[in-house]
Amino acid sequence: MSILQLRAWERDLTVLAVVGHRDAEAAAALRTLHPHGRPTPTVGLVAELGRRGLMAGLTTAADLRLAVADSPLLATGVVRVEGDGPWSERSVVAGPAVWEALVGLGGWPGDLSADPLPSPDWGLDEWLDLPGVLTARRAIEARRAYALGAFGDRPGAAAARLAALVRVSGNEPVILRAPQLSSRDVQLAMVIAAVRDLIPVFCETGDSSSPLELSVPYVTLPLLVARGSSALTAYPRALIPVPVAALSHHDRVAGLRSAAPDLRLEDARSSASAEPRDLALAATDLRGRLALGRDQTDVSRHRTFSDAVERHLSGTAPQGAVLVHPRATWDDLVLADDRLGLLRDAVRRVELQGALHARPDQPAPRRGERGLRMLFHGPPGTGKTLCAEVLARALGRDLLVVNLAFLVSKWIGETEKNLENVFDAAERASVLFFDEADALFGRRTEIGDARDRYANIETAYLLGRIESYDGVVVLSTNLRRNLDSAFARRLEFIVPFDLPDAAARERLWRLHAPTWARLSPDVRLEDLAALYDLTGALIRNAATAAGYLAAGDHAADEPGDPDTPRKLPTITDEHLARAIEREHDKAGMAYPGAPPLLHTVGNGHGRRLGGLAHA
Image 1 (cartoon, rainbow, N blue to C red):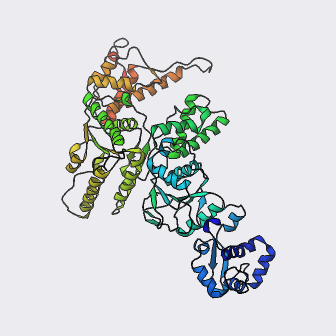
Image 2: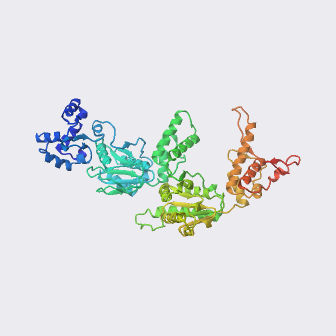
Image 3: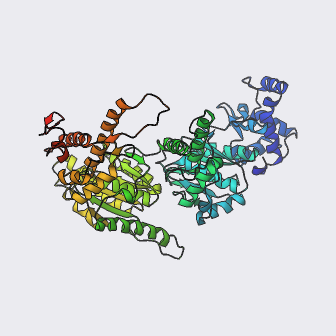
């Protein structure tokens, strides 16, 4: 208990409070002296011992009352006075888990429990060199009484970063989590951690929308707190925010290399939102499969590892959003050069922002100078969602896709609250993507009833929130005129998406041809592109469907001998025609007929495709 600098009588009082735990005979003796038969000393017993000169520094009941009033021992909860009877008959007891800590057992006070998940300190090299992190590290190394706060949408991941910071500072951390933190439990837990030679990191896992006040005046250890909201007061301690933004590309690659050094995972795909903790958990999953003889090739190991990372991240997206790890690249886009130029300019702008505003001599950016706001507009299926994915990957971020069905609420204020959670989550490591944005960002109307009024309030909120947003947000709509005109001046880039011409459609057919099948030599993609005026999404659907039709026909002819080499399915004009006809039917479009080759096959007799005869 040296951390509290206890006086002699306080050490004696601590011994009295725990002696019943230590010795059965002492517990029995205390039980006979207690008016209610409890195996604990009473305040009256402590006063009597002081009067007889057996409590150093206390000789009268008045001395005891004055000493108790300002004692850190009782203020921190190491020793408590319990009961509601006369003061002299109240019990003097050890706080929760104090006895266990003194004898080397486990346990923590209140709702606090130790987090069993890993908190690795690898994959954080560049993060540890950030100015705010270096300041926090110095406070931990000196064991100064500062408050260090890490705030974000993933408190558990933020707590793991703080624990890694404690470890690289030459101390041993323990993460203690609870739905709600309280000064009472935090104070006692810090004392118990000091007894165990640990530095605790407190993680608030519940709703953190309300401000949190933690007063820990008697313990000289640094107070480390991770929670969703930055509304934290720790007076009289000074509060130092610790940045926990997305890790750099260098740290992510180093994390992949360190998660399982013997498995060569540095080339595996990993989400930009993944933390070293997520990588460590995924590596554990992978080793479990390897122990069973599964995933022995590099490709299968990488796939299993990436799937495990995604699984550990699956519950991290806020309500109303879906986290997508982008896989599409610039090579997957078929766009006009001027459209591609706009997208590349947008990526370059974000990269320059990070370099310029990170300089310490740079003045604070004005409202709207940070972040990026874009609008994609054009007919359905022209590649707006794909472009958002390519943009996210080019920036080294994930894509947070807003699901309007779960975001919009009929209750007043709930939609704005859900939107705020989405913005906060995306700002850290994701590009925020609003598909069919006119459902939320529609034109404000004349107020006819209460619904119009609150719809206008939601639009006004979004106007302000987008302008102050420091991340990347992409709005997508089929009809630009449906958006409120006030959004236009808040957008840095507006990218139109047109229906593809014949040359673009041919490129799309070649791009979307299944890799697990081959095209028949008779297939002329240029003819398909000229004949069928389809969007990129419909071409992708048709190409995939034709591949599965070919695979179905191929399966019947495949030899049953597993030692016989297997050939790829062959996609013919007939497979493509059937798939294309179905896409026309789904889209409500008139089907112009089969490709020219199918009109002349056989003895001049047409083939029946999808129930329609073509001669």
